[in-house]
Amino acid sequence: EQLPQAGASAEALLDAPEVRLGGEVLATYERGGAQFEARLCSFGEEEARRFNENLQSLMRFYIDAHSPIDHTDDRWRLLTIFEEAREGAPRRFTAAATAMVFSRFVAGGIRTVLKVCQVMVAPSHQRQGHGSALLQLLYDHAATQGAVEVTVEDPSAGFRMLRDLVDLRNCRRLGLLQPTEGCESQPLADEARAAARTALRITDEQISRCHEVGCYSLLQRKLAGKEGPEAEATAKPFRLCVKRRLNKKHEETLGALDGAARKAELERLYQALVAEYAVLVARVQEVPTPAGAASGG
Figure (cartoon, rainbow, N blue to C red):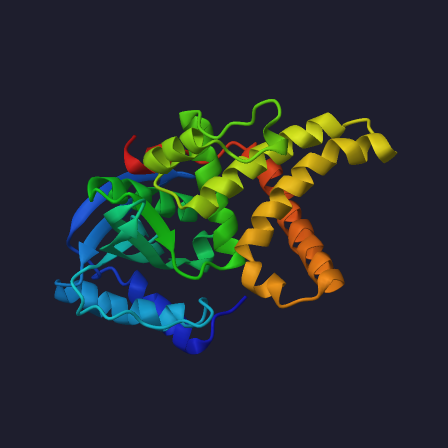
């Protein structure tokens, strides 16, 4: 798909060989024979501000309801990934994210939080694992800042899926929120939730999603070969458990509906969610490009 001319111009400026951002190199990694460098900088640097102007121009074409950030606020950080120049190929912009570290009330006290606001992977580098590497680097940066939680501002459906995959793979790597017998019929224990929150720095909503994906995977194995009333009896506990959470999450919207409409909308929300879970179960089994390679781990 061709970019509009304004977007193409901005992308060319991001690729310009003279673009050399300061800040800190967070990681270097290799993918498909190419070398990539991830760098974090503040907007106190003139070069970063100029780069951000071009980046914001390009993001307008890819981020719904895009609004530019105020880079005069010194809490903002810019994370970029560039493909390094090699024989026959120039240095190229690969991906970027803007994020802010701030304090708010979390888990019973005023804590440091990292908010991811804008994420973009250049069209030429999509579906190569750079988005996952970018998000993992943001998680790693949050840890160095003492942040207890990483939030995402208005994630798109595509980014939500990417975030789920990164979180699920981190769960698997650390042995957290793994499915156990009977998990599909009961909410996650407080101790397991607290452990995941501390280790992963993800929100309660993300913890619930990761837990439910694992339970859904276990449920599908239990349903193999079952039909009719037997399959319904097996699936019912998971469905009710998830619907209770959805009912609470969407209480205001659902509360405005009458009984039949409320039931139908809750069922729609459930079916949409498990459709996402089915995709995630399949994709999380794929061998990912190791995020640790990007973060130096």
